[in-house]
Amino acid sequence: MPSLGGASSSAAARINVSADGRYVDAGGEQMWIDVLRAALQRGVAPRSWTDYLHLTVGGTLSNAGISGQTFRHGPQISNVLELDVITGYGETVTCSKSLSPDLFNAVLGGLGQFGVIVRARIALEPAPTRAKWARLVYTDFATFSADQEKLIAPRPDGSIGLFSYLEGSAFVIHGLAAALKNSGTFFSDADVVSIVTRAAAKNATNVYVIEATLNYDNATAASVDQALKSVLAELRFEEGLSFVRDASYLEFLDRVYGEEVALDKIGLWRVPHPWLNVLVPRSRIADFDRGVFGGILQGTDIAGPMVIYPLNKSKYALIMHDMMIYITHMISSIDAWSDRLGRYFRWDDSMSAVTPAEEVFYAVSMLFSSVANDLKRLQAQNQKILRFCDLAGIGYKEYLAHYTVRGDWVRHFGGKWDRFVQMKDKYDPKKLLSPGQDIFN
Image: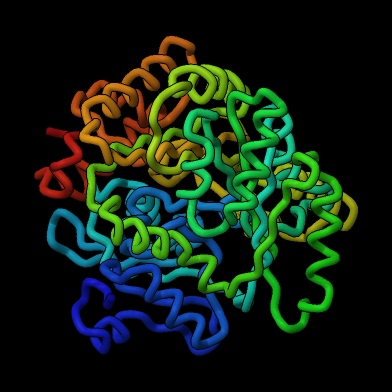
């Protein structure tokens, strides 16, 4: 499918990889899958993705753009070098961290309130060719989450472990076999039987699965299996319940589209999707698990994946490591030190996107599908989950939020609200852009 620009030749003209392969200029209307294909032709690729690539560049950058690479590279908005934006005045403005930075920061994660993204310059890196794709099964949430956090934790030198991508899934015991079979083509029927049998033996109420990849190319192909083995040896998944596949880099990144096609063939895709996405602080994720996965959702019929994985805002260990270098070698220029700071923060707090207050937080996506004429039940269930979080004092933030009451938007943006209003008054004073968000109506 060509991007929204029209024919494939027109789409190609709106995706241009730089001569040195360090960045790609992509039209805001372009699909990420087309950006990926164009970049791969040059042996490069963007660093940060969303799970589903058949979305527009401008669309995901207006939110944040998160996936299993975010723990390493930050969200997609942290990997943008420059934008062309049409403001509420109808003017096209080129902006970056050094050129109209207030507009640049406001637009990224700004829900389309300050301008329409018509071009984004996105950082690239050398592309791997293949991925070792692993899924590891757990029957205990504490062990599951501890291993996830171990895998994203920085080392003393500021580096992170070998995995290129890290996410996870939760499955309630009711309907476990069907849910595993419907989670794509990864698990074989024999795998499903092994997982269900182990869960029953452990009297588990939920099953959790870490999903991770180790990317490689021809230069590292000979060592990738041993590298993966060494990482898995440090984890505490259920013995014998680790499953590994080998996939091309493109096949892995575009995996959700294949699942969409399969569901569409059996009539289970073009149905209402009352999805609920929340960002939960690390200190409360166990409470969320007990109240939601172990409480509200127990015994319910669930169609659609439930994704859960940790993210980290900055690179504190790297900061400390470089501070020691600074103290030891006395970097001659404060400006030189300041220039280094940009690589320490995966989430740039000057941008409009909001996150929980803690350094580590979890992305939880409950991607429900209404396949049994149960849309109202699912919507009520979502509200019950949010009420639980509110009453329990869990300082969550909704991702892809939609509120209808201004006070909810004020609460959502928190300390960023006043700045959000100022930028709206500056770049779209007539409130023409994205009125459907009901933020300023």
